[in-house]
Image (cartoon, rainbow, N blue to C red; front, side, top):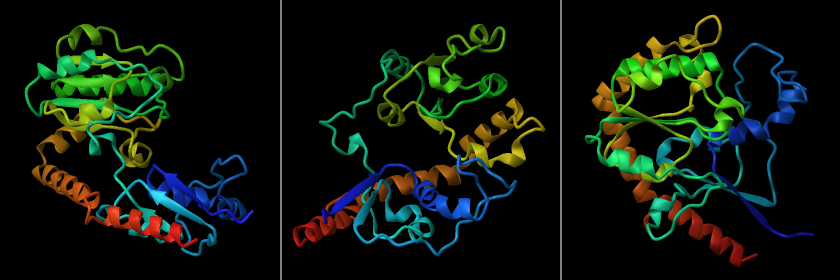
Length: 265
């Protein structure tokens, strides 16, 4: 019909580049038509990607995140992020999960930069064995933690924890089914965020059964919390993210350029 269109991609650009290359991966017999790998090897995307001629993509990211390699694989893409509700304090992001606001009151009672926030989103699922190792790893760290465990995380069944775990971490840990993540991440009591990002790529840290041990989890958390360089880099990226959505920022300029291009259509 000749109607111009645009799409918003809220996830990592690498995921989009991989999705757009699915036909090539099937043709190369790297994955089957169901998306299952046929070869036990890392997938490196070809830079020769089919071009789009009538669609623009808005990316929930910003230039300073060093996403250029992935963006080079995706034509007509415009980083306009970060798109988060905290950019507009008067508005609250919606979700379909019941939130547990009691965790915010619990956080208010914790020391500044002391709590490990653990959440694996609404897609990731872990085996019971891995849940046990994660729970015991958090216990070994000995710091306060807030862990979001919803039914999808355990494939729809009620989460079970190691015997005596809940009693041993009582008062030091809090487990909820869902929470307002944006409010949690800006809370002064949060020290770090443990998520599934990169979880599947840490193959060298898994045992023969594909499980990341409690000792490895403890080690990685302690390394994160003790590394001043990581903290400094995080604060630097935070400032760059704010700059990108300011009036003179790169994301704002990209969005304005898109609007002007649409006016000329």
